[in-house]
Image (cartoon, rainbow, N blue to C red; front, side):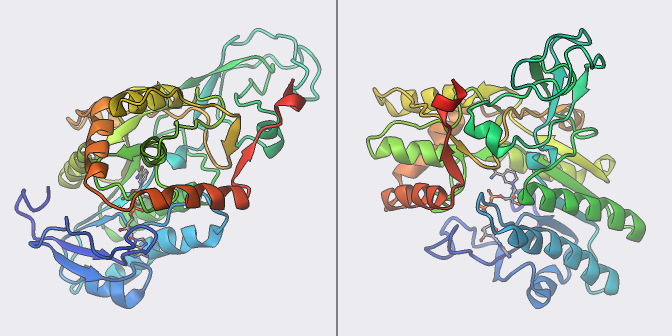
Length: 380
Ligand SMILES: NC(=O)c1ccc[n+]([C@@H]2O[C@H](COP(=O)([O-])OP(=O)(O)OC[C@H]3O[C@@H](n4cnc5c(N)ncnc54)[C@H](O)[C@@H]3O)[C@@H](O)[C@H]2O)c1
């Protein structure tokens, strides 16, 4: 998209084996300069930045595994290093704006509203140790991560922390939803804090993009931990059904990679976008179960989705982004989920050796207890 718009483009990528085990992908345009390098390495980043007017910092480590320090090193440290280099030598690095890849993970578990809206109701048995009717200030709340104990009981949803009654998810906004609870989300929030504060102090315009679940062709199927489309599609191609975590009722808003690219370029070119975070989502909430059904339908599979009561540590319950800030810039997600799925499947059909990457990911996540099964008998 940048090349089409007439920019000269330089890419730096360390070609991580878990994302690109076959080396540099052949879809990388020849017109773009390509440097193999690590963005957290001062020499490599220095080479990448030299003479550049604008930067998209997209390189990242993303995973569900417990290697917490790597998120900070690859994602956050590299961002701080970028400022360090630019501030030290503005002539060599004449950067006029940096757009950082943040994530919906910055929002943590998002935002909820007590359904009873202020009326005290009796606490359910698992609602905590507080007395019935003790809390009347029900309203909006931002839950922290669900405890392992809660997940093991198969108690997927959040209750109102005040009255213990049911709560409903609200759209996630950029202004108030800043409660990351994974090392990945924290690494991305730290990027935002660095970007806005250092950027402002040193006169380097910045923006941060909080993508939701990005889908479409070229999404690496090697990467064991990349999205739901990969997981479901590889299983269906192996003659198995899609397995949904929890009860499959989690709400998500999937967004297409071309819509994401448009959002990136729009924010880069809009001076009024400086100094802000932007939610970039699909604008439509669908459940994981619905997504499984869309994929089964698109592949023509007669199988039904499975919901065996497994859960994955670090997953959020309901996360649907409010995209009005992006919309105010004139952006709109154009590709519906069904087309996302179709495009991904068409691309996957052109790829070889996909099956070997399916079971390994599942095995590793179970081995590290990242994926566990709820104790349904105990929950009952
Ligand atoms: N895909 C999503 O759904 C999603 C959602 C929210 C945010 N994001 C963010 O968007 C960005 C792009 O995501 P993606 O899905 O394309 O990721 P990806 O894992 O598919 O690709 C990341 C790329 O970064 C490269 N890389 C990793 N570490 C590097 C390093 N130290 N130096 C140089 N290159 C390195 C990898 O080789 C790979 O090409 C990331 O910052 C990610 O955190 C993605």
